[in-house]
Amino acid sequence: MNYKNPNSVLVVIYAKDTNRVLMLQRKDDPTFWQSVTGSIEAGEKPIDAAKREIKEETGLQISSQKQPLVDCNQQIEFEIFPHFRYKYAPNTTHCIEHWFLFPLESEQEPILSEHLAYRWVSAEEAINMTKSPNNADAIRQYLLNIK
Image (cartoon, rainbow, N blue to C red):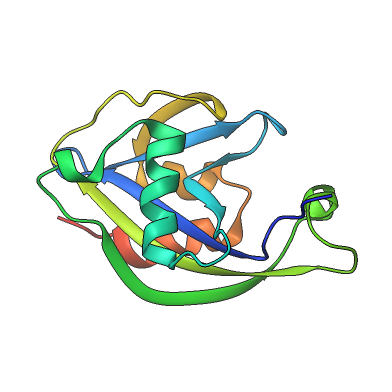
């Protein structure tokens, strides 16, 4: 079995004109809303994984946007939710996550391939709707008070 790498990326996408955050509804847990996330593949750099995950999960191309992908130069360790641990090697309970921001000039409609739905919401609403404490922390730290 191919297990997921316990090293991942989190990419918070937001629109500069509305200060709203893009949230995605998971297929494997419809009560779980989150930003773009994904495992880093073997030999892949975190920034390359972030670019790949943005394209895979939203259809957005970094190169076609006016704003660059921002590496927050922050990584955190978090406990993997028990109901998602089957995707990882036995006894893997924690993951290292690298944080990125992707500002868009305005809200865009994503092309969903791995999620059920999307919503553009305020930073406060995004913090309240995600089950992921680290996703909430990234939004709180980088976007809660943007002007």
